[in-house]
Length: 244
Ligand SMILES: C[S@@+](CC[C@H](N)C(=O)[O-])C[C@H]1O[C@@H](n2cnc3c(N)ncnc32)[C@H](O)[C@@H]1O
Image (cartoon, rainbow, N blue to C red; front, side, top):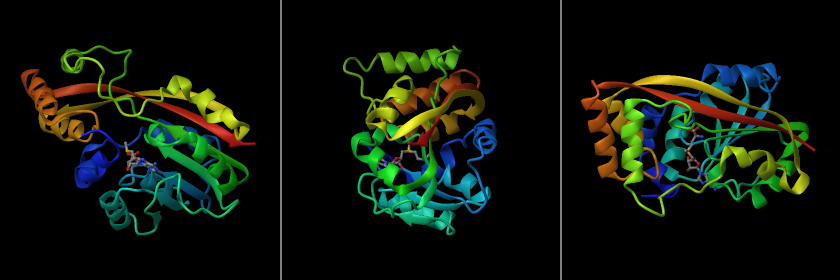
């Protein structure tokens, strides 16, 4: 099933299967002075809290926006210290100038930026920042036997490919400054890797909104045939913008 409802159907699996974001990304945000204890942060499309948790650990006051009811329930249970708003980023009720930072982790491609960017501009205080990042599951710069098998599965889908709403990170600087609400501070790309068993491949790929159950089976079979554990190379582009 495609679409954001996919994540809600797999809420508990999502928590277990999705890897945490790399420490280097959190280090970069800290170095930029964005992770201030007591700072007010808005986590857009929070899912089950892969960004919410580290933001709370940094001592920040987190408001998490999550429209999926099962995801929002899981988020509340995992992180009772976060304020959870069960709504979309387009419709969440946010007080003016009430946040120092907004983050959007692997969710920006679901948002209607024409609506969301002006709303974030209102919700952020003077000097506030927006940090957007996204896991690319499969660094295009690294080829592995497992990635070749994944490529074969995807190639067999035929056209048009079933994809999430597309917003390529290469488009972020233009898309996120459109309307003149934000200016780019920095853009970086983190490269990292994880080792996944075939069961972990099954769990993780099940959370991908554009993968069918049969395709997930094939990917898990490929991992098993390649020795049972595969190394996956990921990339995580990050862009940080300042409120204008
Ligand atoms: C790939 S998940 C990312 C979740 C989490 N931020 C993370 O880093 O793992 C995308 C999330 O965006 C949420 N989402 C989809 N459309 C949204 C919208 N219009 N406003 C806010 N969140 C949305 C989905 O419910 C889902 O939780």
